[in-house]
View 1: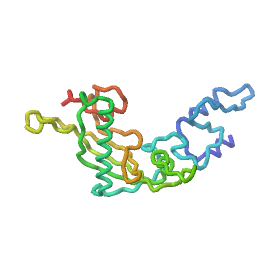
View 2 (view 1 turned 180 degrees about the vertical axis):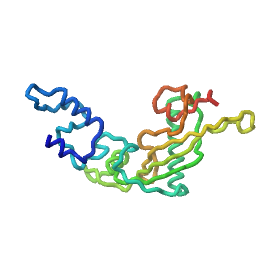
View 3 (view 1 turned 90 degrees about the vertical axis):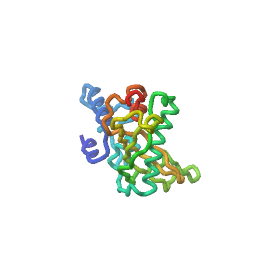
View 4 (view 1 turned 60 degrees about the horizontal axis):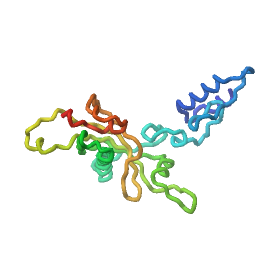
Length: 218
């Protein structure tokens, strides 16, 4: 129990809780614990959790990491507008790569609703933008950004000439990007935080379901 108490206040995840449940399940007849190491993720509370454990160490994706500090940036800044454009462009690129553009609309950026500069994400920066000095990865000057954007299907010729009216098709996304060597790229998965019902029924891939607006829905 001393080790469990020592882990109080340290970064833990449901995977750690799962590991301690396994340890309890496999208690031996003398009620002593033999910790199991059959999983690469998760640390049983019966073992020491490092004080300096990071979200990257624990397998927590950046969008869900509560250890990152955030500073709001004006959405009118060039970096905010660029981040929004790059995020939406990455959706179109993913749909094109998956050959889903025949069923999914090409998307366009409508608005950058929020942009935040994240701090404390050195592990993620080194994952997406490693800077090496010799054989050692060192801290770098890359930036981690979180943006909330509004996107919608790009109008086609029929829409431009008024032959077809669209219902409200705005899509709201929250995603993270990394600025590395003066270029921006999406870092990890993205969340679609607006209701979208059956508008992505035409694809089965989990990521495409998040970003696709099926053509037969307009």
